[in-house]
Image 1: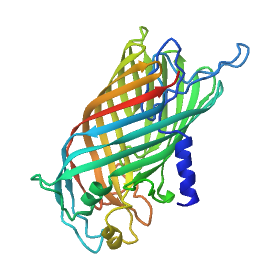
Image 2: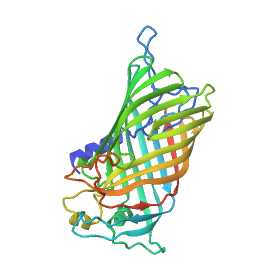
Image 3: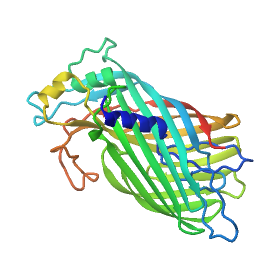
Image 4: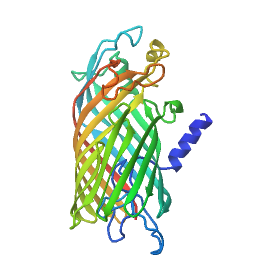
Length: 380
């Protein structure tokens, strides 16, 4: 293993990750965790002396608490997978389309988050995560799969994985205004551990938000993000809106279009959420069947995977700061196409506005029910 790969693994183990929130939670309230990229966060903020300059806090009352360590499992029920034919320009050979049944797709999800700097005028957090998705596949009539299609072979043999690191900076400008920055570097593909892909295949995402915190129960902001959440690179505007009502029962945790939830708090140790989240990445087909690399020598293929998850979540304290999160919902396929990099560069389509270049392979996925459970150590 090269020095760069050893360094990358060390960062993943020591610098916990995911686009998650770490926020201060009142000791009288038991915390609860939000998902990646939730911008209301950051714990252990020190409060300045009354004579010092005042800065706004990165949290508001009633928000779900931050996950410091998360161990979870994601399971999707059965659905159909139709793998399309390669376009003539993809290789010297062409495989016909094929269809199979996916009995289930499932995988482990790990997340770690650590506050590095926690002061009144700056909060800095580092994080790391690991996600995987394995596929159990059979033929349309229930027989074992013996498909020559390289995409089906790769999914069945290797599955898909994400390994990455991220950082978040909260910079208050005064007692009402703030800047929020998040950046991440992710290695996505059909690799296995410890057989990582070269680090040159890292995907970079970032977001910057200018926000206002008018009171202790509301914060909102506008910004721009570089994201792969719909499966391929896009630059999109983002809207942040976190709010809690006067009774601390109802609220919202929104980072649109990535995620939006309505929150109901039974008590500080039990919370219910309803809403949706966009999830996805671009996955390099690096460890697929050998004849993919041979026939497509000098070409790079990636799966543009994006999905919409309509869901309900229940999060509650098991004991003290150990919490459990249970969610169930409906996974809607948004994109699962295979694309070819042009000269090693991604084709930037901007939702089809800047390029009408065809995908190398267009695929079809059914929409199953899904279930996810996790145990979390949350911020005190």
